[in-house]
Image (cartoon, rainbow, N blue to C red):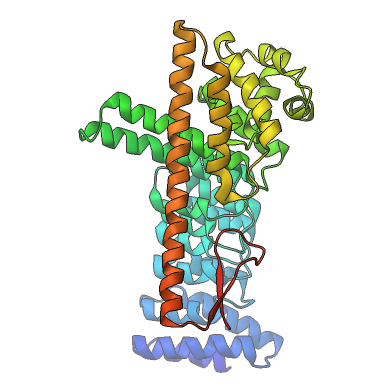
Length: 410
């Protein structure tokens, strides 16, 4: 009887009064004990209010029912309402199924897609739908949603669709589960954009811009391959991407060897030689070095570069990998110097080109080592300044982290 009186009253009440009455009706439906017949009539009344000409009424209904176990027909009606009302329900309603949400993403506007992307129950299929047809804002939001379940293939699709957009690219790179191949793809996109800009505005010649881009992308590839989470499948995926982009060059493989971090070189040689990664790795690190020459030949390394590969692997075995990040540039420079000495013979064109490449690597390593030394000197100066201010500070020299010292009060 009360619901019937409400419907009669709503015919003549003002919009603001109807909104207040509708809010009270929805709250009573959710939280007050009702007879079955009364609940059925209340549902009928809420369905009727979906056709109210005032958005105030429909918004009041959405605000109360959005996160509740409300009648499905009412929720679906609100989903079809104007964007701001639909977004309230799409963001929180537990009544909506995966199929409902996928459909809302397909036909909805930016507000609707963004509301779905923020939900706490974004499934793998729903995330894929958002990335496939959603706007860039929705894609960025779902990538940054810690509750969303996102498959690697969906991350790849996001990179393919929106990797050239800075905010989406940043959201991808912030994910700890982003495969190394996608990280490299994004780095290539940034490097390519910078190369086009630098060459187009006259900051440097086109050839110089292309060389800087290539060398930067090679450094990124080597760095990604040494990430601790870069397991064999990740490495081989990165190698496949490099091959597809015609970037799996002997120069890149040699750069990996000269860095002392040989993961990328091992994976590349294994792929090119058609052998298991474990086998290629064993050959690279075999102290006898007997399998290096056959491995290089089988991998198709140009004859003029093979001496550098042999010398680099021998130097890696003797010097070893960098013990920590701060020692990478110094280790790389020692390895490059060994290879330069081993290859400094002959005046033919191939050897001249090899020596020019090695000297560029040597210059890079020297510059990076100088930058590391400069940082260390600056840290020493900062420490001296602190000790002048407060002599009671004590340096905790060895705390298990070789990157920076820690100061503690004496």
